[in-house]
Amino acid sequence: MHDEDVAAREKQAEVIEDAAGDGVQVGEQSIQPGDVMKLMQRLMKLMRRIDKKVDQLDGRLAPLKEFVKVAQGKVTEKEAPAQKKAKEQRRSKK
Image (cartoon, rainbow, N blue to C red; front, side, top):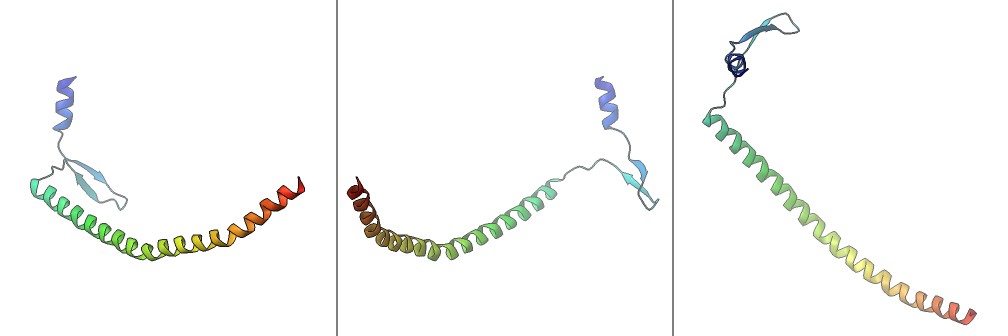
C-alpha cells in the first residue's frame, strides 16, 4: 500500500483536454521559498490596507457614538418627569 502511494505521488504530468480541446499538462506544483515570501508580502500589504480602513471607520464612528450618548441623555431627561407623573397616577388609582 505504501509503495502504491509513493508511486502515485511520483506520477508524471498528465495531459488532459480543456473545454476548447487543447491539451493541457497538469503536474505537481512545488512552492518555492521565494513564492512564500511573495505571498506573505502580499498578505501583509492587504492586512495593512484593512487596518487602515478600520481606522477610518473608527474615526467616522467616534462622533456618532458621542451624538448617541448626548441624545440618550436628552431622552432620559425628558422621560424622567413623564415617568414620575405616570407613577403618581398609578398610585392615586390604587
